[in-house]
Image (tube, rainbow, N blue to C red; front, side, top):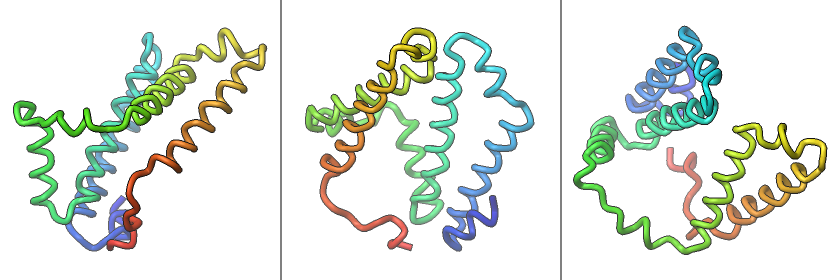
Length: 154
């Protein structure tokens, strides 16, 4: 992970990102917790959420200009009293529709409903294709104002 961190940049924030990533991977490999959690009902969904938030936490250090900015972002995130929800309610309605479609699609496949009910009917492939087309279209057409590709900023 240190080599991966240095590949992305020579700052301490990248090294810390690599250390955090290595820490979470090491814990996962040593304890095999995702496999254990998947044995309980809805465990695969729960483990996906945990891994998702671990990755998001690491990306704070990856994207920040320096460690001080990273720590400031973490302080803001965990200080619930100062959360500002107003920008969330200013998104276009289509954003919420696409978000709901994406969440339902992922839950559909994570829970295995497609394997239990619709596997032999062909409906599963049709639903998968339709939702993918909608989500890809949303990524293309609802991406917002153009900005510089993140790797051009290093």
